[in-house]
Image (cartoon, rainbow, N blue to C red; front, top):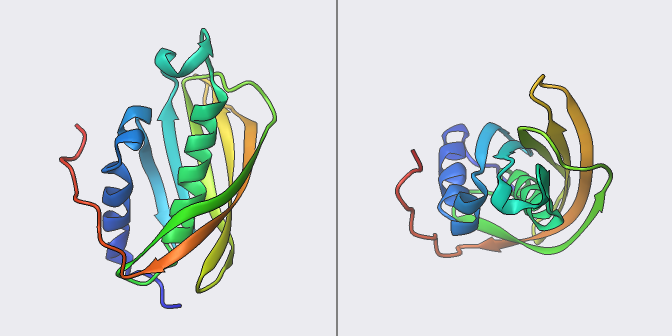
Length: 154
């Protein structure tokens, strides 16, 4: 498969950030490369089950976005993808100022792409603690209609 052109990373980011759940989570891209993505999500009390500690659903969502977006970065223009299977392992409490997820492609195919993400809790000092890891499969879809872009978050 032919990867996106380098300038298409902006389109990929816009597609992800147009999703209401991405906006609710406060996702922010810090890196996009072919087969790799890094996302950050602030720790918001509205997503915590205990003061300062994120609930598992938010952690899973961040990991899923990072992994599947990394898979999407390998697709040709006009293609999209969606999660069809994912498994997350929670390893440590998700506490800190934000979570940082590093997504990567494990094996890219025409129909399915296996992808993964590691999620780190980032302390105020900048120290990272691995708190979750995810392995997922994304279904690649040719010629899928694009989701309408929303105004960029300020």
